[in-house]
Image 1: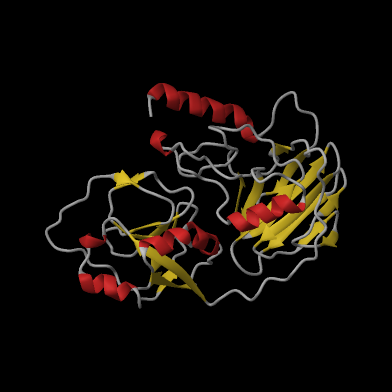
Image 2: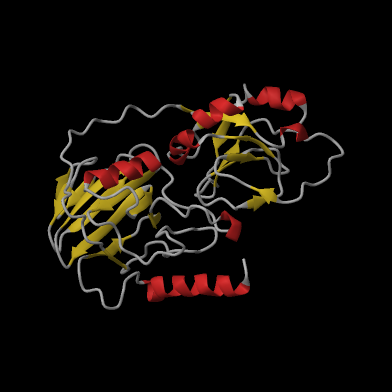
Length: 325
């Protein structure tokens, strides 16, 4: 990326988040004001597609099915921006008008205006009322959608916060203002029966298609990967699911170091300690550690909800099966 391009991107972000307030100066319409941001809450949409050549990660909602369902409940199109809240515990106040909201993803108690409200359903919010999402009871990340979406300024075609490169709006902070978009004409909240989630599994099973550098590892190490058990490390984040408490993968001797090469979503990179890292939405676009395999995108929503300490197992599949899901 050229210095000129990078200055332009930084300038776009400075306008978007100047003074910790994500808003347009002339916008006095509907908006939400952050009262409590929780441990980590960010604005996310479908992500930045097709810009990896600029060194920009894709970003976007980690649990795409939950993200899409939240938007559908309030009548939004598929690409509207939502708030992704890790561990929940967020509170926002409606200002400038009424709104419809929906919370999906990891189950959490919801309150609107001090009253208990439904999770996984469209809920009416009156002007001045507080929307509170409590601590998640299972999983890791919940999604708060509002009719019209969160209308923060886009950067490279997306409103997503990218924690690796720093593009997009800053993580939510107390007092931050989030403007709301205009609801789509002819649409409205979806009134559907809520189905409770099944009990979360005690083990995360991830399919693993062959990677481009599997020949960098001893044959017995790869065979052992099919039966190995790991756990999700507390050091995991939006960049990658870091694994621990399992057998390290042993590199073949005499190979030296690998030059940096392109990385894809779901790539399983193996750093020098031998413990795999599954790349998620904020992953770097290049890397110098060998990729032993690739987890298909269909399995990454479950990875996004994997809490620290949960057991993880890989299921090797063929390359074609990994792509098709």
